Length: 336
Image (tube, rainbow, N blue to C red; front, top):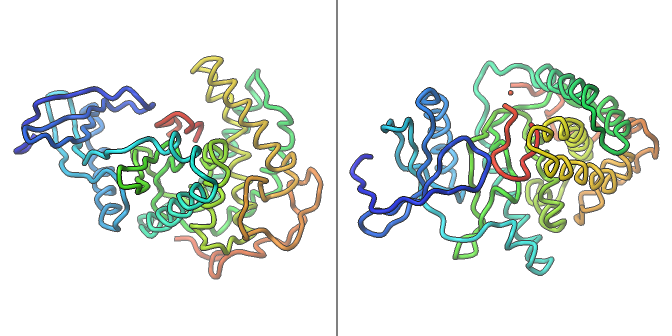
């Protein structure tokens, strides 16, 4: 690798990525993150590296992309090393106010990431995601293991699919949750693992917030408020419920190949989601502590809160504005 000589190399075994990951140290004692991928992934990994450079240029705290190239084992990317601890082990042990503070920061970081636009020529979001929903519904219908009250998730999806129309598309981290964050030695929240990046509805990026809420409700609440600066539109909550419901339906079919423990994790998560959303009768989950709660209540019925005026709280211009991979990167990623 260009002009860097490594004196030690320690494998990193955490995570679900197909990349081989190492902590490498140069002759000056500086540590780096080295990711090695199969040579046939060169084009995709080069695009990933380029996008990471764009994100880093925004000042996002992350593993900075330093070098990219070919090596004997395939294609590599060299990134800066983050000294710190996993956020999912640190943040839940903090006082609630500190958990919220980290969540607010995570939301602001995500808002910055979403300033990168999707390339021109993207397929219409509604067409793309409706196709994904249809696939997930079929996976669930064919799966021998069912989640508790699956009918409530199906009703929520059916009642809110129309909200996909006219959604904008931006760059997405692709797996944005507390399990893909660290707290460095200076107390700064750092985002890691961009290898599931995509382009799509910015609000869909919140579909992994279930993992945040299970670890820390205050953090999840802060994440939403940080992103919207406290002014959370009702349309966001409804779309988020749709995205979470569709993910939940496909979570067990996704988990079965990984064994019973993973299936049990997803079944528990489905029960948690039902509890947060009152069996999908309300769009605002109980873990949300902030001020962005809609003034108008939703009908308490299995229609999936279809009684609220369509697009009522969309942000200006969102009604008209328009401009797939299924393996998770880290524990908690779940189905895509």
